[in-house]
Image 1 (cartoon, rainbow, N blue to C red):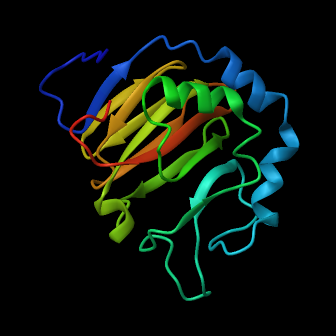
Image 2 (cartoon, rainbow, N blue to C red):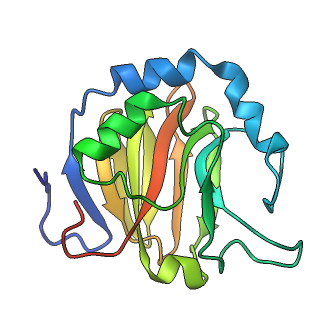
Length: 185
């Protein structure tokens, strides 16, 4: 079911609101040490001790000079099989053949700087968010929406976008990519 507040929106598509995310969220909250897992994964690039990045499927780089934005290679992390609730949810939306996927955490008042997801990898992927906890403002170009927990959205990540946590608790969201297709949610 696609929930569309405004059919003239071009940068967002609200797929569903009020998704029951309780079991998914509880599984994340029950495993706080998993947020450090990325520092132990080999063949990755980027910051290895970031705040709020818990990857389930991520880019594989073969050399330190490889750019994760350009590689099509990916692998499931050791966390992939542990998070059964999100995998069930992905399957229920026929998104279980996703590409990269991770939980992200953002502190109250924190923001993700304005950026575009560029590179060869993103040319063939659609980007989705499932909001699990906290409220955040999400802006793509000049279109802004307040995203509440339980909201499943697509947005155009090939345009400038940013997020700001406007709740007194961490924003937790599940972000994932799927190969472009006319049958995507």
